[in-house]
Image 1 (cartoon, rainbow, N blue to C red):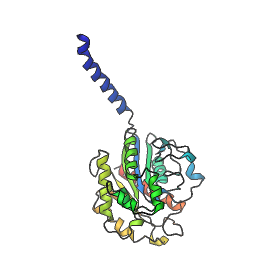
Image 2 (cartoon, rainbow, N blue to C red):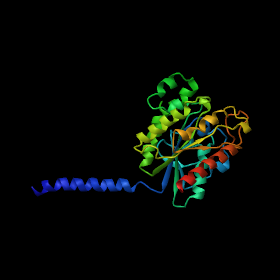
Image 3 (tube, rainbow, N blue to C red):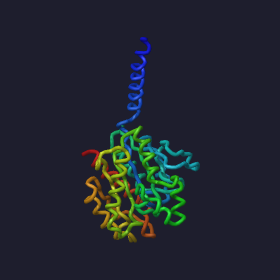
Image 4 (cartoon, one colour):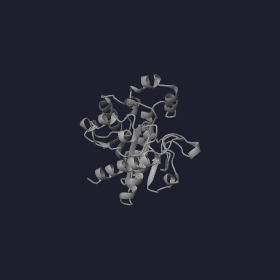
Length: 280
């Protein structure tokens, strides 16, 4: 009879210790950031040797399997370009992370999750409403979406939940809007995506800063520069939103994408803004 009485206590003891073990694996000094958007967040510039130098404190949680990079989905790797799909380029997330490791204490590590799709509207990330958008999109966009098993938003959340076991999600980076240029409802749509991300991750409303970058600016011949006025209104609907200026960030001749130098500068601006928020 005694052994029967002890069984519930042994089970409770084991569960308690399993819980402690799982909790112990979460590193409060591992700061994780979610990033999403379209081609500029995906990375559209050819990276150079300086962009492939590994930093032990800067990691990427791989978004898709990439044999050419020897990376598997859902595993952490040194964060060197490319950070998104297998054949993408340099983007702002690269130097966002490098800027943080440069300025934060050495015991702090940085992790990036980047799920982005070139040419995509914000509607691609609207949970429960993206399928119609994808079905009505051109084949080239549908093919990119297939790399995320047909649902980039679901992949972002899947990876974020993996990351929550390893560290602390501290913020969200967004660079999207070229495909929504002139859409005055973009801020509200973006708020919907932001709110859903927090809810799906079990986080309190407005608990994470959202950093949104501007399109290529007018001074660089930006074809979507008019969208910047709409992006600048984002903090009126998301209290924790901050807009990252693209002024003087070098762009390519296409007027849509930044050069490698432009991405490095834009990434540093994302990083310095986040650094100021982390230190408040």
